[in-house]
Image (cartoon, rainbow, N blue to C red; front, side):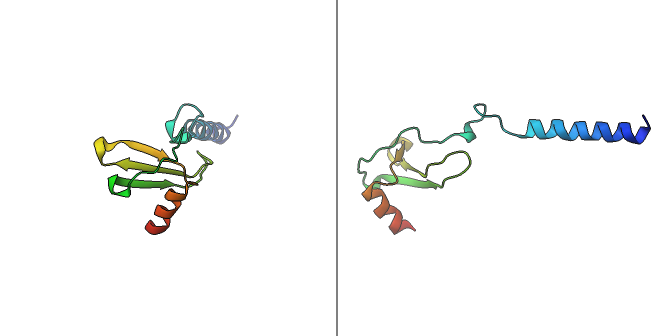
Length: 94
């Protein structure tokens, strides 16, 4: 094989290896999963909120996730985005 053909073969192989190792593998990366395994409908007073995160549907999770960090010991709670009280709070925030 001529030198240019060998060089092309090596370059192609390196690109393939780089692509394989750059892709996340299912089950190996926490970012490929929903953050909320369970949600609650229980009302929480907005005054106890430290932070609200709204995570839209994406390739890693097909659910809208609403994660509330409470002032009390930085407790993190996942709430049901369909709960009426959650929708009211989100409409006020947005």
